[in-house]
Amino acid sequence: MWLLVLAYLGGVLTIVSPCILPVLPFVFARTGQPFMKNGLPLLAGMALTFALVASLAAVGGGWVVQVNQYGRWLALLFVALFGLTLLLPQLAERLTRPLVAAGSRLSEAAGADPRPRPGASFLIGVATGLLWAPCAGPILGLLLTGAALQGASIATTLLLLAYAAGAATSLAVALLLGGKVFAAMKRSIGAGEWLRRGLGAAMLAGVAAIASGLDTGILARISTASTGGIEQALVGRLVGQSPNVSGAMMAQVPASGSAMKAADKTPGALPIEGNLPALDGAVQWLNSPPLTAQALKGKVVLVDFWTYSCINCLRSLPYVKAWAEKYRDQGLVVIGVHAPEFAFERDVGNVTKAMKDLGINYPVAIDNDFKVWRAFNNQYWPAHYFADAQGRIRYHHFGEGEYAESERVIQQLLREAGAEKVADGLINASAEGVQLAPDMNEVQSPETYVGYQRAEHFVPETSLVPDKVSAYSAPSQLALNDWSLDGQWNVGSERATASAPASRIVYRFHARDLHLVLGPGADGKPVRFKVLIDGKAPGDDHGTDVAPDGSGSVTEQRLYQLVRQTGSVTDRTFSIEFLDPGVSAYAFTFG
Image (cartoon, rainbow, N blue to C red; front, side, top):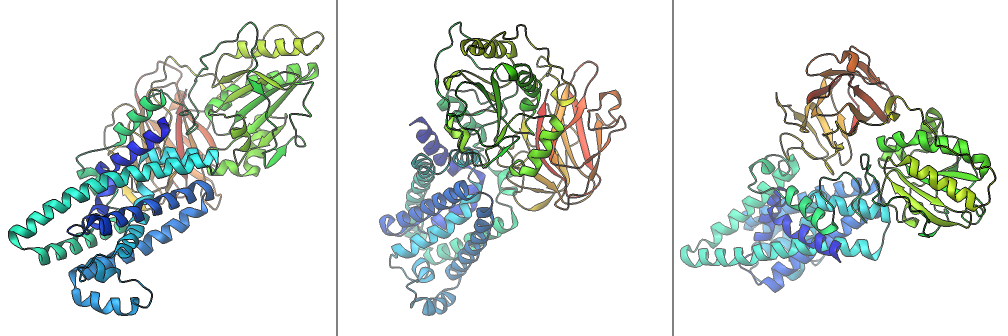
């Protein structure tokens, strides 16, 4: 219920979002006509089209993006034509002649024909909904990602419809108030004809703004209200979690959750939390034939949810590997469930190579469809679930840390299962490179996504241009945790791709370690880069993937450690310049 309220309020807030500004002229074009026969069908068309496109995005994955882009351009052409008919009644008359046979008199109904046309208004709303759907804000991104992870369901549909209903509510209020204002103007100055033409010009300007990307660029800069902070506050308040906490919102978007620890400690008598799910939703198994909960009866089972570019997963991995080795002969079975965060992590070849590089030899289930994830009702990377020999989950832990407690759980469950000579003592996992434990006393920078769907603290604020090559200029100074782009970049929903050499990313951070998830171009050729810290080569502060002079190259899609400071940790300005085009940047993490 709370999530439905959240989605509805997020939709209501759309009215003060910069992205909605180009849509308003299309809505106000319905003023001066009966609301039930014109305004309401328009809003219904917008809401239904938005919910349909959003549902396709949740169910269909990447292919629907291309479909939506084509629909977006068709909608732009249609609305541009509608705007011209408002400006030119003669054009409206000519266009409506062939459309009569198809039952569509949209232009005449909106402009030259004063009679109400609910069907025309509905179709106008359909076109407007296609324009609105791609850029509806942070809460929509939260809903869609959660829907993609949890699959198509009635709950997902209700969330999307609640969001669309909220936006329709705020637009309906604007339409009703706007209609009164416009009616007063008509009575006082008799400017109906000029008003109609003005609306046509405003619609054409809106089409031009959307087509050129100004709806997410200049309009965002001149907007008097930004909904990002309000929406994030609503997320934190309604879901019961601070918006500054790194990690998954319950029942919504999973995230790495830097060094997040579960609230519950290891109890003396381990409770029964439920039964081990069937494990039958994986698309493929590596290092093992498919395993089932029934076949695992008699074994103590540790299920580790991970993904190979997640820094928190990588830092907990030495312990999971050590437990698998130490307790294998005493009855422990470790199963890794690889649930991808980014699109490239769905490539089984990438996962296989990462497992080889990381030395993982226990069974791993490829959970590209998140079926195993949902069976556990999981929300975090990493997440560890401990099941006893009877197939009952007895303990869980989310995030890094509390390794001693987790190992004692393994020992206790093995003893309960009747294992003889269970090894005493605790492991001392040896970790280096990216797997070395973080210095959390010095981490003051949060996990930061580069794609526009979850980007925060980008400077200049709200000026990311989605899905289009644009020129960016980084400011000379940044505040702590602000970041910026410089050069030619194409910013997508989950990544930014450099379109020209000498493109840079700049970040003002405070942490011992800085990591960045990167991938080479589509051709797979290595991309050379140069790292600077406070404008100088890193020297002894270079990461494992960078030479002391700051040079390095992106050769595969993975997490790269770019900075590891050896001295005192202070606020530093990091920059990485890519000497070749084509690189993709996904997310910063710190340690």
